[in-house]
Length: 364
Image (cartoon, rainbow, N blue to C red; front, side, top):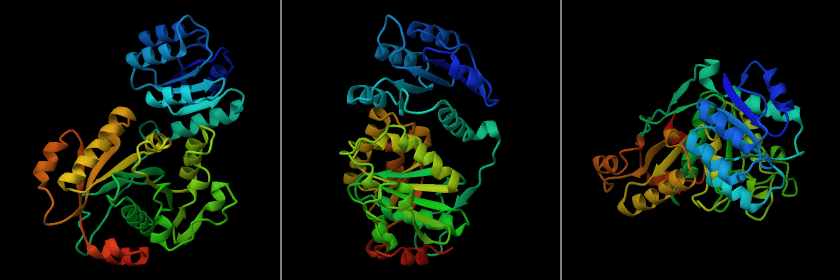
């Protein structure tokens, strides 16, 4: 059961949450910042803090957040802000806090349902047995060691530019669909989008239609795709900060697996939120000296700057050939990371612009 404390200036939210059997409300709403610190020092096993930016107290909001994370770096923090601005957004994102609401923009029932949906994905508490899929190979490529959990899960493909994210996104999604899992591909590579080309589909259903759900395109049995994220999510648009998280939660209700192709541009402001939303991250590396250096630099950014949990990252070596670095060298370089397996380079796949041809090569 998720242990929650609230610090928003009134006890109504705490009382409503207490009515839900899936939450344990540790104390009444805490009315001042120093009180939050005191409670967390005494109760270091709190799972979630819901806090208002304008909470009373002698210390600043930023000081409070920094102290909280020193006490419990694993705590989930949900913030209500008076007004969204770049300064508070950047501070929160830098500290790994992505669930941000503006006061009065969401009703209490909607918020509680959203919180409940997030909790429903706590697989241990609900004792849901997860099914694993195994990518089987009938031709040259070796996917034997690539295992990914499915069923209501979000998988993000990450890696340096030209590491093969888009191609492998399509391959994995097609395999999930063949397994009978309802699968959605989301192309979040805003700057180098190619999923629609690989799938042989249109990028938009209607360029003037910014409702993302209306941009879902049916590709084949059990497989849909959205390639129109640039209509809504780009560095010029101001998007409600909670919409991205809620959007993915909604996708998880409708699909067994959501596979997200991401950009290699770590400065893209939505990248940390996408990767934190994901249940698992497949990080692709091309095993050459130059490419590994690029991959290492990107990994450092993800882990140190964006504060991505390394436990949900699995490294897959892609485009492996006879000239690739030895696995022992790579394992030594990334000894603190989980290296799942490798995918051999195949010129035919590199040249293909049709997912049909790709799926014929990897078989059932």
